[in-house]
Image (cartoon, rainbow over all chains, first blue to last red; front, side, top):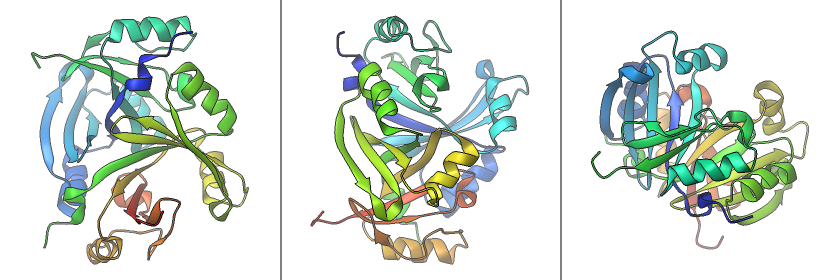
Length: 141
Length: 141
């Protein structure tokens, strides 16, 4: 079996789901001192998000804006806290094909547009309860 | 209020708690392709851990070896999955004093020895359900 691309993957960000972005920013930026890089609404995913500088990676705070979204269901079930970890890969199609061939359970069978490129999520069951996001950064974003 | 050190903190690793390190390594290294950097037993903390290369940061898999440890209680309550996120700071004593002055709830009131330096954990309630570890790397480790 060939080595998988994740051997060269770089951690991009850690996603933390919260009830309210303003309240979370008051803690993370106001109290903890992280610097806000970007804040945006992502209606397609039913979430509002904020990226914070963490040196070699970022922290993503995300809060559902659509009660039917997967993020809203996650928050209702688990409460606030860690949600996913994101790795950058060079060729997402190829990585997904390799993961599928290894029998790993995917949430997204093919890449879909994210705010920083093409993204796909693995099911938490694929990685011992850790939801992994894969990101192929696009030059135009 | 002075800017907190976390404004310059670098993400060091994401900790994922699992039932069994061997089973998790079979997935993370065998199937997902991450490279194992280090594996060790930490009897003082009642855990067995493994660090995996993630480019600019690392993934820490941890599995309790002591049923009375905090990690064992976490695993029993939440199941496998994300456990904590670790940031490197330059002066842990100073950072903890600043956090305490801001009324943030700490698990460790003072730095204690970790395997890569001095560490202290914030209570998950301090950061919207995300357990934050702070690490002051020591040259001798």
